[in-house]
Image 1 (cartoon, one colour):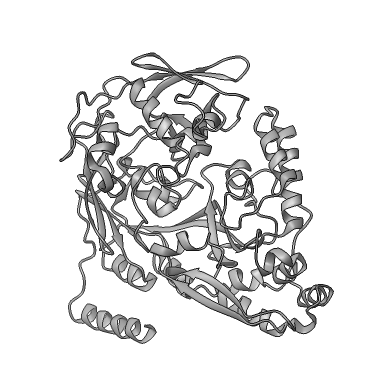
Image 2 (cartoon, one colour):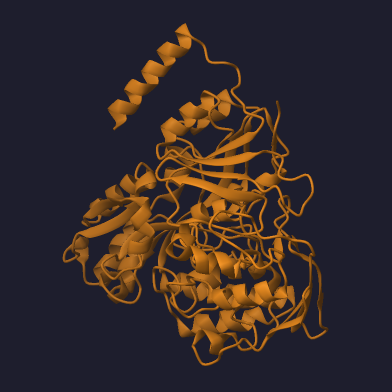
Length: 530
C-alpha cells in the first residue's frame, strides 16, 4: 500500500508541475468534509460513534444544543425552559412552526412538531430493546423511565404534555447534566420510523437544516439544504457532502488540490510538514477526547490478572509516541482517564513509563520474563493501523517477553466486534461533548456500559451520587474519588488526550470549532466564499 501511495504522489507532483492546479477549487454552494470510514448506520436512536453523529446532527435536532464557540448548552427546538426550585421539574416551551422534513416515501397527517412528537421520540429512546435504542441512559433520571425501559409500564410518568407547545419533564433526582443529555435526544417523526421500516436506519428524517439525499457506500453521503428550515437564512450552502477517504495521504492530497474544504486527519509523519505548508490555515486546541487501549474486565486473561494490566500500562512510552513519533498530534496520556481540561482529572494513581516496574509486576503476577503469558491479540480499526503507538507498545512488550499481535479490522465491523468476549484487548477512544467528568465516567465506567465491561459497584454508586450534587466543588470531589478507584483497577492503558487539529481552506467562512471536536460543528452557519 505504501508503494502505491508513493507512486500516486509522485504522479500528482509531476502533473502539477506540467499543469498547475488552480489556486482554489471552491464551490460556493457546497461544503466538502472528509471522514475515514462510513458510519455504521444513520439511526438517531442507536448512534454511538462520532462518525455517525457528525452526519445526523445536521438532520436531527434536540430541545437543546451546544454553543459552537463555548460547548455550553443553549436552546435548539425549545424556545426556553423553566426549572423548579428543587431542580426536579423542567418545563420546556417549544418553538412553534417547526416542520418535519418533506421527503419521498413519508406522508404526514401534520408536519408541524408538537409535544406529542417529543413524547413518542423520548419513549423510543427509552426502549429496552437494544435493536431499537442504544441510549435509554440519556433519560434514565426521568420519573418512570427505568420502569418503562424494563417493560413494566406503558408510559413514562415523568413526561407530560401540557399543551401542543409545552412539555413537562420531572426527574427522580436532580441532575446537573440533564440539559446536556438532551442535545442527543432528537425529535423523530413517528411516520418516518414506521413507513420507512428497515430503511429508516439509513434514511434519516428530522427537522434539521439539511435533508438526507444520498449515501453511496464507501464513497460519500450527501445532504441538501432544507427549504423549510425554521432558522431563517440557514443553512448558508445548498449541499453538505461527507467524502469517505480512508487514507490520510489521499485526504492531504485532495486538500492540496482544493477538493476538500477542511482537513481533519493528518498522515503519520506529515503533521509538521502540513502545519508549515498551510501555516495560515492550520488550527488546533485541546479537546475533550481520550484515546486508550482497553482491557476486557469481566472475563478472559486480563480480567484474571490485574497486575498484568498494570505492567502493560507501565510498558507504554506515551511521551515518545505522541511528542516525537506522532509529532505532537495528541497530548501524552500521563494522567488518568479524564482529559486535563475536565474537572477531577488530577489523580494520584498513574502509570508512568517504567519497564523495570513492568517486569517486577509480571514477576509478582507469576509471569517472570513474560513466561506463561499467551500471545495477545490487540484489535485496531483499519484507519488507525498506521498509528505509531501500535509498534511502540508491541516493541516494549517484546522486551518483557510478551508477544503482541496487531489485528486490523474494517471500521464498519470493528465497533460492534470489540464488545464481544473473544476480544480482550483493543484500541478505542471517546469524545466528550462538554467539560464534565460524567461525560467520560458515566458512559465508559458505569454498569459495564463500555466495551471493557468495567463494572465496579463502588464506582457505580459514587457516579450516581454525583449526579444529584449541585455544588461544583463537592461534586468534583466525588468524581475524583471514583476516578482514583478506576485508575487503581486499571481497565485501560491511557494513551493520549486529543487535540482538535484541522486545516480550513481560505474560502471557508464562519467556521467555529470548540473543544467538543469538529464533528460537532454546526455546518449550517458555515459559508463558502465565491
